[in-house]
Structure formats: structure tokens, C-alpha cells
Length: 411
Ligand SMILES: [Fe+2]
Image: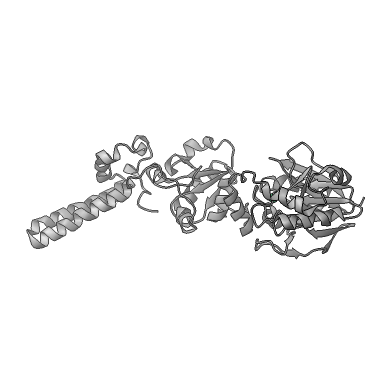
């Protein structure tokens, strides 16, 4: 054997670092395990030269782009893959050189149109085409029972394979032998294509959790490690249960936020950062101004790996991503704008049509806004907060209300 295999497993997903000579290839890297692949390669004295996804994944965020950024390695996928970040688009039976060995790609569609099985000497890395005792599902992401049946035949006909390394392990069986699968895998062993197609067609397991956000991330080919994340990237992180911290005021949060995000207003971020529980936060505000200010404050406390949603909720909304709302009354700062503008307008109209003394009303409102801006204290917000329609708002019980809020009208 001119190569070695190191297996990584998390949440049922298997990924592999294949080492040969002074080169390493990573198969199906997860974004949250990138550091572990790096450490392994460094320990082996190799450099990662290829990052391969056997297909577009729906159940974990791909780490290929981040590996490519850290190692200048090539991202390899089948030519039908959507990600624009792919450097080498592989076709059936194409080969790559890895150190002292050869990597041979078999196009095995069925689970997805871009599914590959990767042969390295006697080892076959099957992604979600063949699993121990079964196959990947064929009912989403362009899957096809008919194509899967043909791909299984292709795999049955392979020569010199001894070990199968699948893309998932749900039975504490991280690898299996080719012979064992040929004998006992009910789908791989069945040479009657119609029966295989019928079995696959009748299988409708539940979709993976948070599938949409993960697919969006993986298809976009985004890099997960950069500091400014796009809405699609944040959606992917959110889907995987990543920590999203919304630093707007509480009432802004209640009027529309990313599902699963937590609210810690900017003016409380230094005091409450222990609520991160050592997770790396992604900060969100309305337009990106306050999130950047929060990042600066956190970094001053020695907190690293802080990232931001670029252009804040504005970019989230522009991307058409879902927004959760817990309070349907208008945010206090918008109520202030409407009330102040209305009073100024009424004062001007009455001053023109009825009596010039009413112009003092407009002047009073203007002076009040100037005072609020200078002192950071808004009397109108205090008054509005006491109105009955605002009394049910949870934000009114919070220290984060926008009564003395510098940023509430700014971003
Ligand atoms: Fe898959």
C-alpha cells in the first residue's frame, strides 16, 4: 500500500485524510473539522493538496473552501457540481496523482447527479453511493433510483477492491469489506435492477435537519472562515446550530430576527459575552455598523474568531431568507420617527393656515430631536414606551429598550 487512511467521524458523517508520500487528500471534509485535518496532515509531515467532496452534501457544511484557503489546495468535485469554487471538475474514470499513488474517480450518480466514488489502490471511498448494508437515498437533490441501480452495477463490476469507506456510519461500522457488501448488502448484492429501483423509490426517510441552509452554503462554495459572512453563509451556520448573536436593541430583534439567534444588544455585549459558552459568535445588526462595533469590543476583551453578517439584516432580507417575528408592534425608534415627523408637519400646516404661533410646535419638536441626539435621551421615546400598545412588548422590560439608545435610529 502506498497510502494511509485516517478516518474522522462526527454526527454520523465520515471524512477521510488520505496520505501518500508528502501529499494529502481530504475526502468529504466538514467545515467544523478543518483544524483537525490540518493537525493530522502537519503531524504526518504532509501538505494537503486536494480537498474532494464526493457530492453536494445536504447534511453538513463542506470544509473544502476553507481548506483551499488555508492550504492553496485544489477543490475537486464532479463536473456536475454546483459550487463555483471547484478547481478541478472530474469526469468518469479521470485520474489524479497523489504522492506515490493514483486516485481514480468513478462517476456513480443516483444519490445526487454529481456523486463520485473514489478508488485509491484497493480502497473505495463511496460517499453516499454505497453505505455499509445499504445505499444513499435517491429522493432529493436530483437523485434517481434508476441511476443508482446503474451505479451499483458499476461498483459490483470493479476489480481489486477490498475495503469500502462510506460517507456515513450509523451502525458503528466505519468501514466494511467489498466482499461483505457484495454478499449481504441488500441493494448492492441485488442484480435485479427493477427490484433495486422499486426499493429505492419506496424509501422516503425524513429530510436532514436544516437541509436548505446547508445546501445553499455548499452550492455557493463559500469560505466559512472569513470574518465577513454573506447571508447564505450565515444561513448555513444557523442551520448547523452555530451561534448567531443579534446586537440590535431588543425591540428591533423582536420585530424580525434570524431564527435561533440570541439577542445581546451592543451596549450589553461586554457584560454578557459569557453567554456565548465558548462558541464562536457570528454578529448581526441592521446594516453591519453595530456588529462591527461589537466585534471591536469583544476583540478588546481577547475574544477571537468573531465574525459578522456583512451588511446585517438588510442583506438577509435581500436574500429572501426567513425572518422570525415575536412582536408585531412597530419598533419604538420608528414610532418616534413617525410621531416627531407628524407633529412637525401638523405644526407647519397649522402655522401656515391657522395661526403662525403653531410654528412653535414644529420648532419644539426639532429642538427635542436635537436635544435627544446630543444627550442620548429621548423624551418622546419615554412617552411612547408608556402607551398601551407598547405595554405588551417584552422589550419594555429590558434594559435594552431604545429610550437612551444611540444607535436606534442610526443603522
Ligand atoms: Fe449525501
